[in-house]
Length: 214
Image (cartoon, rainbow, N blue to C red):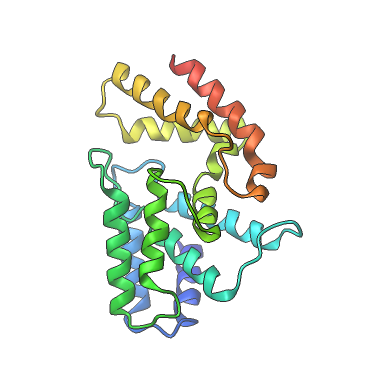
């Protein structure tokens, strides 16, 4: 069991006054993020998301949010990849609905279950995020793009493992299209904090990976 994540979850849950077995809920999350077909979208990805979130809240020029907003963002991150199947195209929707169900059944509306679900849906990258908190969830999820070369290259290797069932030529063309869409944006990141921190390096990483694919 990942004790760092477990303790974070139990602390979060106890502070919300939710009903239900907090440890059982965490064990379910850990089981899902530990599925054998995952290589990147794992517990390690969750840990990285929470490190990024913690740093954003601590930095003097970072992010400032009220307690309710922080909880909503964190819950969205916990559940944003709870369903992950590279052969499916509805992972974010299924994850959003699952999170909404779990939080509604817990009968505590300190964090609005519908809002948590909406923040998860934005990680599908099918629409522009409208609200600050949505943008924060998305930027945290994409922080991997701006990591040093070694970490980014390992991320790319892990993504390939998750799509190992896709033939090499088809994967290269599909992955190149995904990376190009990020590069075509005016900015990859939505919030100035992440733009300052990661934008330049993310573009370098994406261009380098795209060149290798094509």
